[in-house]
Image 1 (cartoon, rainbow, N blue to C red):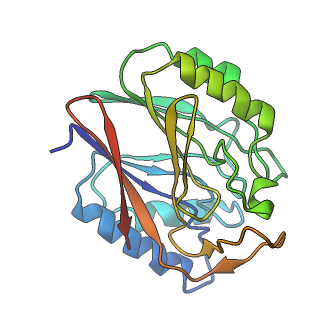
Image 2: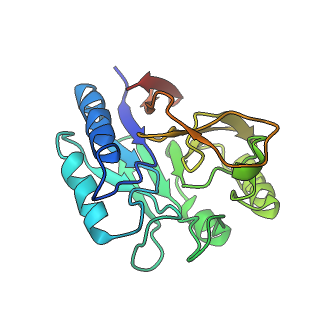
Amino acid sequence: MPSVLIAQLSDPHLKLDDDTSQPALARAAEVVAAFKPDAVLLTGDIADTGDPEEHELATRLLAPIQAPVYTAAGNHDRFEGRHQYVADLDHLRLIVCDTSQPGRDDGALDLEWLEAQLVATTPTIIAMHHPPFELGITWLDEIGLPQHDRAALAALLDANRQVVRVVAGHVHRTAMATLGGCAIVTCTSTNIQAKLDFESPDAELVSEPPSVLLHALQSSGQVVTHVQPV
């Protein structure tokens, strides 16, 4: 049994007037609930337009999961002020960064704030919406984090080996990389995915199967990430 189990969902893009995004998140919640996680992490673009009612709808759809839900701000979301904070779970620290920028799709990372939170030696997961690496998919890389933020984060991770995983969303695909010696993984959308195309500069979304991520902290302090299809 894992010491701590965190389920990650991402990018539901909930709309009040459609019949796809809502049942898609409900199905993902049903799958997650069966694993009885200690916490749920929703890595942004919860709302499609930023309407508070879309956020309230997300809360209702995730209610079958009997665990606290931690949210990150995506470029489609609208939160009051900076939506970044720390949650101390049993044996695990969760640092949620706000990479959103008002009126923009690309991201920015508040590295000074993040560095100030890395004061504990507890195994730590850093969560954010925009992933700190390039996927090689042109249109997604153009709305990611800037290179100087990625480079600075690499140095920060290299100096803070208690960070056992960086997790993100935004790109509507599961993708993995390393930065500063730390593993990074992105989560698919609960609804619709980005097409894997390394040549076209144009955005294209496809109806590929969604999945959720399950981050399991082992007694050794290692985190193992499982991809669970929905």
